[in-house]
Length: 315
Image (tube, rainbow, N blue to C red):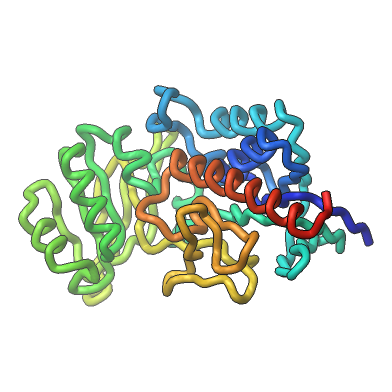
């Protein structure tokens, strides 16, 4: 079993984690980033990104490489391993890896991200990035002047259906219940929007596609059992988003949705433990906001580490 000491351990290699790594190295911290899979997070699976400031158009994987290469330029240590446990301590925090290696650090930045909930129906995974999306703000632009289908009945589904109705010629809104769960004001706006057609008491059973992308979605009425096919160019799925909070240690405050509550420095209720990106409670989840979180947390962590060293007399 190996034991190593760092100023900072970053858990997660998406935009937030890599941004934190860049700023940690610029602050001359002895830092390591631990990522169990391919660095880049969810954007590595995104076909095109057109809303990252300063880069008009870039592939998701290419943008990941830019983040990664920028971090490597500062010689950030990156470990390809799985973190199984984060144990807060008084003198230092301990991060336990799958191979039982234990990393000790003054500060920890949790950048594990989140995961959009899936429908788990045929055609969904196969068409991800080719017409299936979980983010209207990210991908709505690509369907300008086209027909799309939104699946979901909460505030996010209603808000994004309204957003897409300003871009697309036709929006189908499919929900499994007779009534939407979203707020009344959003429901009123949806019903008043002529470009939105509601399909209630219905569930999507299959997403259809060809080599060019999504062509339609099969829908089943849960009351009658009747099947229908909606011709559509894209499917936006909003049935929930789950923060990857499995590694958040006990004692860290979270909201009812499982998102970590932080202050403006991205610091949690436990000193020296920070949360960034899609794991943190905030207004919106976007790449630019995740990167900003990483910057803020790394700068705050550098200040925290400096204070801890002065307090303990250790370097």
